[in-house]
Structures are given as structure tokens and as C-alpha cells.
Length: 401
Ligand SMILES: Cc1cc2nc3c(=O)[nH]c(=O)nc-3n(C[C@H](O)[C@H](O)[C@H](O)COP(=O)(O)OP(=O)(O)OC[C@H]3O[C@@H](n4cnc5c(N)ncnc54)[C@H](O)[C@@H]3O)c2cc1C
Image (cartoon, rainbow, N blue to C red; front, side, top):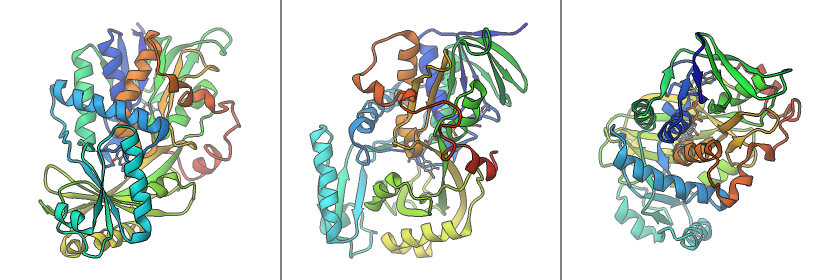
């Protein structure tokens, strides 16, 4: 007999896990289908920074709400996921960059978030291993970090304790709709079985467009590749996540070309994660020696002693990019019962809890925040063909896998 669910979540990354957790906590009967295994997509090939300083406007409001939820989850989930409120530092190479650093501090001040400007001396007091010629920076004491893979598993495990049915190795291959195929959704078909449901949440990250096409819509979400280098253990080399000022520019850039800006994050195990790169090069996830070299060069510029530290592995993940740098969260009018929770680009770890909470509020008919219109999927034209330049042909040609 075909099982029935109140909601089927597609995708076992951090966003799908957060949706499943909050939906189950609301008392719904939820099934989650994942084509491989939990956190097999981008949520295990990324940093785990919960950053606010790189956000403004609606993204910042989402980030603040989500950061508060992460702090709560760290207290309430049964499984530990290395949540730490480390604080974060923005690095500024020369005096020309200081006005931008001050502007970030002012934006945070205006939003009630603690932040302070650092001169070169302050910077080296906080991080003695930085290059001695840096002009200064800014300190954001409330930034935090998690292990993203462990956080995904912790959310899924908590959801299972609240009734979640998890289907792994269950790639979604079709979505059936009622009536003449134009009405509400009725069934999710996977390679390993079917589930009847009237509500589907697509949390398939960079692959969300492939799933959306199964209900006849086209989203503008594209894969934006990013590499990480993992160094040999070097405990104490840095004490806070470090990001160079140009990082925010690379996030906002719409350039197709390779963008590199330093991100350095110390893990609980003492290895250092070094990034960041951004490229639109389709769905391939193999690491490139050229990009790794560019990241290493940038890292040594800021942390010269890294020149003597080995890299033990590297990997690449696909950020689910959206053209206005905001995720797509909520129902899709053209496919009743189909919801999107995708398009978080480089902020999906930070924004996962609020995404899960908002999807749950939509489905339960709870009150939604005033800015919800800015993240509704229907702010884009989702009819087939509308995004053809962005999301379909070009990336398919580069191999969707
Ligand atoms: C190098 C790098 C560094 C990053 N650093 C940060 C950071 O510090 N902070 C931050 O907030 N964000 C960061 N990000 C972004 C963050 O990793 C992503 O936004 C986030 O992981 C997206 O989560 P997701 O659940 O939407 O997607 P994913 O984790 O990719 O999950 C989607 C899942 O859907 C599954 N799926 C796909 N198609 C189907 C199908 N047909 N049927 C069933 N399942 C399917 C996939 O297998 C996958 O497991 C970084 C990203 C990269 C690449």
C-alpha cells in the first residue's frame, strides 16, 4: 500500500533537515526523501559559519532570527554539533578598505548587533599570526560556527525522534498532480517507492530546479561552485573565523569568472578550513588545482606561517545561487501544495533554522513576518522558459549530476 504523509520534504541537506525538524515538532506526519544519504550534497562540503556582518536588509533579518534559533538548537538537540559563538573578524588589507569596514560596523550597530572597528594593533592582539602589514578590520563577537554535517544529522535525528520517516537512496523521479495535472500535488515518486501527499517541500539545494521541473516550473537557482582546502592540524593558529573584506563583494558579484577571497575557519579538531572560491561552472564537483592554488595564495597572504602547513584534503560544493541573493521560501502558486526552501547560496547553514521555521509557519497557517513577500518564490517568473538563460540549458550542458 502507498504510504501517506502530511508533508514530503525532498532533500536531506541542512535546509531539508531543518524543515523536517520544525514540521515534525509542529505535530505533522513528515517523510523526507534523499537521493543518496543525509548531508551528501553541499551541506557536507562547506564551512559552518553563522555570519551576520555580510548581510543587510531582509537577509540580515533572516540571519538574526536564524542565529537565535541556532543558539536555541544547541541547547535543545540531543546530539552535539560543535556550535560555538567564536565571534568573527573582517580583515582589511589597506587603509582604502577601512571605510567599508566602518560601514559594516555601522550597519550592525543600527540592527542592534555588537560590532567594533579594529586598528592594526587591535587586530594583531586578537590574531597574532596575521600578516603584520594589515590595516585593521572589524570584530563581530556574536558570529558563531557549527559543524554543518553534524548539525544536519542532529536535526534529522531530532526529527526522527518526533516521528520523521527518513528514506535514503530515494531519488525523486516524478511528482504527480491531481485532476488534469494542473491541480494540487498528490504523490511523490522515488526510485524506491511512492508516497501520497498533498504538500511537498523542495529543499534540494543546487538541484532544486531539477525537482521543480517535475511540477512544470522553472526556478532561477543555479549551482555556484566553491572549494575548501583542509590543512593539517594547526591548533591555535587562529582564534576566530577570518574573512577578508572582498568576501562580501565576491558574494554579490554576478561575474561568471572565478572569484577568490579569504575565509579561514578553525574546526574543533584543529584543522583549518580555507576558502573561498565562487564560480558558475555547472554541476561538476571535482576540485581544481588552479582554484586550490588561488585559495592557498590568498591564505598565505593573510597568514604567512601557513606556507609551512600541509593541505591534507580538498573538496568542492555547489552553492544554490539565487539572482537577488535571497532564498526562495514558501508556496508556488502555479503548483498548489508545492513549496520551495532553496536558493540560500553561501548562507544556507546560517539560514537553515529560520527556513525550516518559516516553511512550517506557511504550512500551519501561522502568522508570517512582514518581509515574507521578499523571499516568496513567486517574486520570480516561474513559468517554463522564463529562466532559460540562467538555470536550464547552460548548466545541463555542463552535466547535472
Ligand atoms: C565552499 C562552501 C562554503 C560555504 N560556507 C558556508 C558558511 O560558512 N555558512 C553558510 O551559512 N553557508 C555556507 N555555504 C553554503 C551552504 O553550504 C549551502 O547554502 C547549504 O549547504 C545548502 O543546503 P541545502 O540543504 O539547501 O542543500 P544540500 O546540502 O545540497 O542538500 C540538498 C540535498 O538534496 C538532495 N537531492 C537533490 N536532488 C534530489 C532528488 N531528485 N531526490 C532526492 N534528493 C535530492 C541532494 O542529494 C542533497 O543531499 C557554503 C557553501 C560552499 C560550497
